[in-house]
Structure formats: structure tokens, C-alpha cells
Image (cartoon, rainbow, N blue to C red; front, side):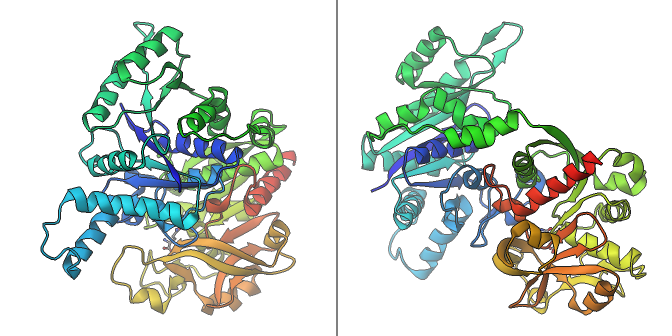
Amino acid sequence: MSKYIFVTGGVVSSLGKGIAAASLAKLLEARGLKIAIIKCDPYLNVDPGTMNPYQHGEVYVTDDGAETDLDLGHYERFTHARVTKDSCITAGKVYYSVITKERRGDYLGKTVQIIPHITDEIKERLKRISKTNDVDVTIVEIGGTVGDIESLPFLEAIRQLRWELGENYAINIHVTLLPFIKSAGEQKTKPTQHSVGRLREIGIIPNILLCRTEKPITQEQREKIALFCNVDVEAVVEALDVKHIYEVPCSLKKQGLDELVLKKLNIKLPDKGLKSWEEGVVKRLRSPSREVKIAVVGKYITLQDAYKSIYEALVHGGIANNVRVNVIKVDSEGVEKGDPKKIFKDVHGILIPGGFGSRGIEGKIRTVQYARENKIPFFGICLGMQIATIEFARNACGMKDANSTEFNKETKNPIISLLEEQRKVKNMGASMRLGVYTCSIQKGSKSFDAYKSNKISERHRHRYEFNNEYRPALQEKGLMIAGRNEEKDLVEIIEIKEHPWFVGCQFHPEFKSKPDAAHPLFKAFIEAAVGKAKG
Ligand code: GLN
């Protein structure tokens, strides 16, 4: 039977609960435990697929095609846990399921209520995941901050589960903040006391407090927090700010978090250390041999979380090449009016990530033209690949009005368009081409060099596709169809032969990149950028 660790958050949002949960999972895996890791999100959307990046940040896609919270990206990057559509439980999913059951008559005669029907549904889902994956420990992160009205059913569900399972089978880690007040020169513990108080009101006493802090905690403060929050002194764990997120597992290990958790769960396992992570990831991050500058051109560049997996995959590409990747975030609308020569001065590679809607599109097309004509390594992902194709049709094949029907339905040259199956779609939720599809790779292409394989599989999230009618015209002018989905005869990768490194892919390789196993295309892109930097 799986044991459970519930991770809640207090005081403020954005405390890095997801990274803390993923790091703990990493530490427990290093001890030899099999882990499942789940995110509970209290909002009423069934999934974040229909949300704007300003609301939610990146939408992370799993192999089985679920559109999920970006914390699942951290889980996959830090661990080997299997992440699927079940790993993301939203209030929307839970209510949808309970109401569907009510309509079907499953609760005939009863009043359907938050307690027990919604809470039972949450508990069942949590248990099902542990059981299907046959894991030793299930880590459950509850989104939001304690005190939010929305998260109450989730907190009640974990309270019940803890009570049902008993001591040593389920624990709660509460992540809080110790703000440092400069004028007083002091760290404040009161917000933590209050948030633990809110937890206690609903019957949850945390076993461990993970305290986010800029400065080390003194013994005196530890004792004070322990006394007022009902936890052991040793269970007040300091989570100091670190330079890079991949240092968090090492920093928490230094604080003895894994040992403490195992003790509370009554699990005895030898400590095998974290050597390969420390040497293969952290050490390389700290002492790279040189730096490359990569421009990421998008419309959500002001938002740190909008292209989360892209930024992380670039870091991984850097680790694999032993270089630091310095990302320059470029607003695509700015490129419409500005001078690309100035904007991309000293840049060693340009990446255009995925996106939706027409804002900033012309700036992205100008960006591709600049990268193509000036032989700057270029990586186009999903929308980025579609833009690269449009640019090539316009400027290398003379089809001046080439476009995607997403941006201009009337264009005479719909280089990118909808397949018949997408034209019929009425509901916007979960109806894109989603999840893993196979792709055959052309020998002799840059992609083949990178993957060293002619059969790969990658995750998708888009509606529009390369229009096959234009294949011959574009190929004739030097566009290479480097990857294809054979089953549906779809273009998955394009390249330009006469260019040092110009690759566009319809899928999202960033979702499968890890710090200790960079995605082959990101590794190759950064390698090409290093080549450019060396001149
Ligand atoms: N908007 C494009 C489409 O739906 C690209 C999507 C994306 O980049 N994820 O096909």
C-alpha cells in the first residue's frame, strides 16, 4: 500500500511548492522508492487547456495528451515518475464527474454534497493513481494557498485520508515563507504561525514545515516556530533561496529532508547520495566553459512562466554542451517595427516557441527571415515551425500572401491550414491534436544527426498543419521535409539545407527534455549556437 505525502502552501503563492515536491520526489527516488506525484488544482476549469498564459503560464502536455499544470513539467524533469492525465486533478474534473454520476442516477435518493461526494471523489482519484502505478509513496501537491475558499474540499479530503491511513502512512509538509523585513533586520515568523493556524482550524497539523527564506534560520527562530506551530524542532526545515532550481534537491538533502520524511513514514533505507545529479547537473550549471546568447521571440515574454519548458530545455541544452545559455527575451511585436539587425546583434541562436492568435505574427515572420538569410541557428517549435514555413513560402518561393488560415482565412496560399477532422470541431476543450505521435526522420537531415534514429515519438498540441499541397513547391526551393508522421501523412519537421542549423518541428520537444538528459534537438541547437559563437 502506498504511503502519502501531502504538500500544502501558506502565506503567499509562488513559493515553489511544485519544485519542492519534485525535489522531494527526486530525493526519495534516490533512496530507491517508487513514486507517484500528483497536482490538485482547485479551479473549476476541467483543465488549463483553454486558459490564457497570463492566467496560468504554460500548459504542459503529457504523453497521453492531457493539457495540465506546469508543475507536472517539474515532476517529469526531476523524477522518473509516470505523469499522465490522472496526475492532474482539478476541481473542474472532480465536479464534472460527480455531476455526471448524479445525472446517471448513481446517487439515487441522496442529496449530493461537497462532503462526502466531492471529497470521496478526490480520495478515490488519489488512491487510484497510487494503485495503478503500484508505488511506494504518493506525493500530492495541493495548489493555491491555505485559507482559499476553493481549496477547502481538497484539504478536507486529505484530512480524511490522513485520519484513515494513520500515523506513519500519511504526512503533511507545509511550505511557508519567512519574510525578511529589511528595516527591522529580521525574519518574521508570524505569517507562518497564522497559516499553520488556518490549517489547524480544518484539522490538519503539519508534520514538517518547509520555510522559504532569504537568510538562514537561527536556532532560536526554529524553536519559536516549532513551539507555536506544533511541530518538532528538527521538522522546521530551512529552504534557502538558491541560484538555480536544480540545486534545490541538493539543498534540501543538506537539510536532511529525506531522512526526516523517511523517519516520519517509518521507512528504513540506506542513503546512496545524489552524486550523478550533483555532478551531471549542478556542477555543470555552476561552471560552464563559455556562454551563448539565445533570443526567444514570442508574445508572452514578460511572463516568466509562459514558456517554462522551453527555457528549461535551453538550460538542459547548455548543460549537455557545457555552456551557459543566456536567454534574451524578445517581444515579437517589437520586431515588427524595430531593426532586426539591432535586436539580434550578438545573438548565437534564435528560437520561436508555440503560440496562438495573430498578435505579433508579422514580427515572427521577419525574425525567421533574418535568421534564414543571416545563417543564424534557428529553432521553430509548433507555431514557430508554421511561421518558418510561411516565411519560406513568401520570401523564397515568391508566394507573397502565404499565410496560415489561423491568421487569414481568405489567403490564396494557405500554407498552414486545418485538416478536415479539425474543421468539424465544436468544443474548444481538449480537442487539439494532443499527445504523442510517431515521426519518421529523413536520413542525412540535422534532425537525424541529433536523434541518431529514424523513428521517434513526440508530444503535440496544435490544430493547424502543414498543407501537403505545397510540399513540391517548397521542396523545389530547398525546404527539406525532414520528419513525417506516416500514418496520417503529416509534415512534422522542416529544415533548410543551405543553412548551418535551421529546424522547425510541429511537435513540442521541450516537454521531454530533462536536466540530465537534454532533448536531442535542444542539445543540437545549442551546439550549433556554440559553433556560431566560436565564429
Ligand atoms: N496556433 C497553432 C495551431 O493551433 C500553433 C499551436 C502551438 O504552437 N502550440 O496549430
